[in-house]
Length: 315
Image 1 (spheres, one colour):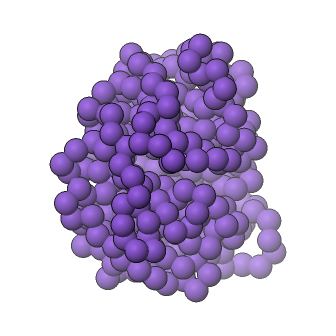
Image 2 (tube, rainbow, N blue to C red; image 1 turned 60 degrees about the vertical axis):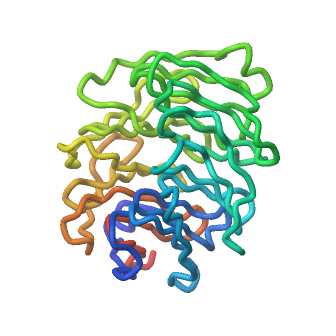
């Protein structure tokens, strides 16, 4: 099945998991093979889902440190995550035996951006201390440090050769991983978002586009090579400054975002038109997390409850 407007409009909640979390889910991530998904929640829980069978497999807890952003490494049985209690360290956890493999210390304020390299054991973290750090899973020591002029968001490109840092909600700086210490090789300046802050930055799977989520009413789409603004997506509700995730479909033809009223908004990435507004079964809670499975025709959304969506038509 290929994604089309009619397929996107046909997505319905196939499974709703109401008993896994008592507070809002703050982060979700799919494994590279699409077979497993993981969530973190304000209730300090980490839930592992089997995407093939559509059911939760295991729940772990991070009661002492809390858990905020969570990302799979290249192994489906290990993750890295940030904390929302105690300290600003990043933790490397084995899901198999619920044991920490390593801590990554250095940030002095809350970590607000976390990106795993698509090709090796390196990862990026950005913090409210106005730094972006480059790490390697095999070493507790920071491999690189960039001081920036504002709140950063950072992400690897799909080939893992360059990474982008969004700074102060107006600049995108591109770095070559092999020579990042020489500074960015290009900088794009966008019109500054005065009413909101950039909260995440994602590359499309083909590396041609950059999607910028904000804590306001706009989502921006930028050409990754020229820095030219391509689209501004609006229409979803975000009047409370929430961190609502926006994501690409795997073919980068569509952009999806959660909304304050629990709906999922879908836009055409090429022409910017609204393709669909999908009604969820999350009640009317804000939809914080929205991601497409990278391998299967499946969508995951999270508010306080996790939902798996499937298309209801065959094409």
